[in-house]
Length: 209
Image (cartoon, rainbow, N blue to C red):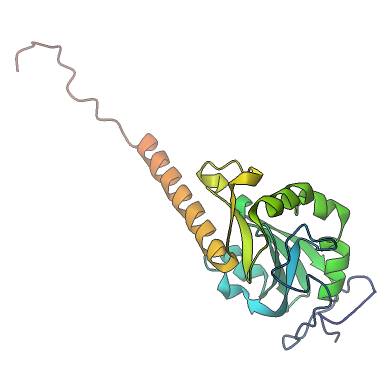
């Protein structure tokens, strides 16, 4: 079987991938400290070796669909790979959702066909927005992403001047906690609306007991 991270120029293959495969990254910024506005910077980072999807607690759906984290964007999107099926996907943290892009025979091919696509650059990486955030906030350090303060789920507007730099793995632990809290509050409110109302006594005021 083909190494899923081997250099490839062929189309995606509908073949299983060997679990012991290890990545060889040939694309991405030379240094994690490059600002996103650096000429040629893709606005994302591919990991030198994959991390287990178990490093993303709180995203249970990912654990069923993928095995590895293979990279992330400078705005916190996560690039995922499933060694069992050879599929790749992207987690959109603030949407509490992920998109499966199907099978590719290498990480480089997924990079070339999806991550480097002009549409992905515009609508997911949000290039003009990202460049402005990077200009205002400064270059990223190791394992850092740009994080809006407050998060949009807490009322933030994601304006370029609202961003700070934060650890990507901490960020990815906090976001699902926020969604879990939000869902719990919504469920509690729904239960309160459905609860029977105690109408009390129907006696008119001043009526004898």
